[in-house]
Length: 115
Image (cartoon, rainbow, N blue to C red; front, side, top):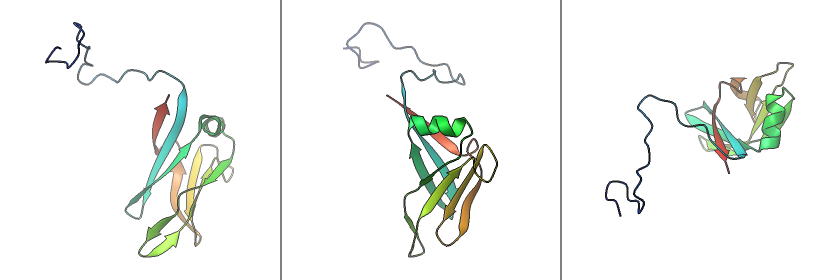
């Protein structure tokens, strides 16, 4: 075993040069997780590849998010994509009639998960 790499192979894995972009992910897209913040909390929604494609194509799509608690009260939230006649938009509203996030889904942080 090579003590530098922890590998039993003679070859060392090549490291990415500092500042260079990471390698392009390989494999099939499994899901995308979007993250938005309001009220000092991060709210997230995981979307499958078929629905993510609909969103990217500009089709209106919505989903209920995970319920959460804020100052002892329970709230539910709803994620609305490409809504209100605006392609690219994202509005995350919560019970009680408020909007927690209003912007674009491109500006929301997202993580892509591959198989």
